[in-house]
Image (cartoon, rainbow, N blue to C red; front, side):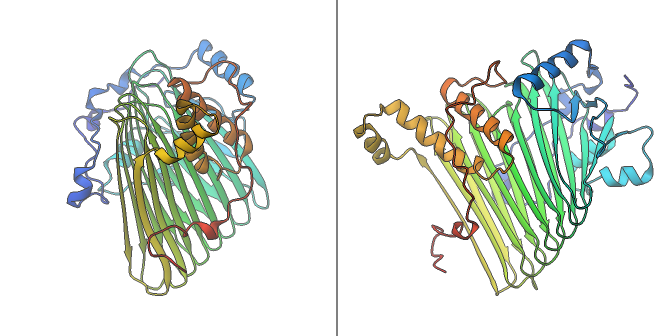
Length: 428
């Protein structure tokens, strides 16, 4: 493996200079991560045992992985729509495709400057395709920039499975630069199930074209610390963006998740919704920011954040925010966090369900409201099964013989017209 890259520039960076976190409120609720404690030059290459393990997981889960990334190094892809770009042989055009940073974003700058393998994924016109990606770490890992280009009149589903071993500390960094052409459709699903010793940093930047759609669904279960940023822009008329996040924390896990949605054209629709369930002494910072620019008339935007305190020592900070520069719009933001409703528990106990089981069912159903938005059925069932397992056992990781039976879910369609209901003083 080529390890001649210079990582000295990463020392001491704390990633605190995010352009959307300049105000005092965001500075207070902020998870600082310093990568100087990780020596990325110790990244280990994949071996035969790693390949056998991934193949066994693929067979066990009945999921064919089109691309496997181990410690930031990509296996040869099995899908013609995927290109692996080595940093030392990348052209100027390829580097430009992979680069999604600006001078204020230290995380993106770090990823685009220090990667070994970058990934470029393209869709095919007039086709609907699905790509499954498995990302595994068992030591410090090279960052991976991923570029996704959805061409006009095409549909693409990308499922990302993030996993790490329990052996030692690991750092995982992934950035996504997404471009969706006119009438294109992208569903992007990601589940984080890393070990408690892992630190995860992520960034997604998306431009959505005319009458195109982006459905971004993220499930956070694993890792010791997660810091993720999504900057999603409805760039042209009729663009539609939906961001859904489910967070399930235990023990001392910490989550810092920010979603920025922007209506930049007329008759665009942007929504961000997060459900968090926290146990033990876990902490979550959930920050949703929506902006509607002047001239984006006829647009809709909402930010909705909900949290359940599943353990008395858990902490959930929900910070919705909104900036509206146009009058002819529908927009709302809301947040609510509380322990599980005692009246609901009493009702279920009166029907013969014990209190512990009642709490579990309520929390499970609360998170599955987010999972229900996922259209890819295998990923939906897999995610629901892992959430069910963590709620019952608090064990993170992929078990052998994962039980996907008995997982109840609503497979019906979600009516987007109801998403504004329940928001304070929104009566139209």
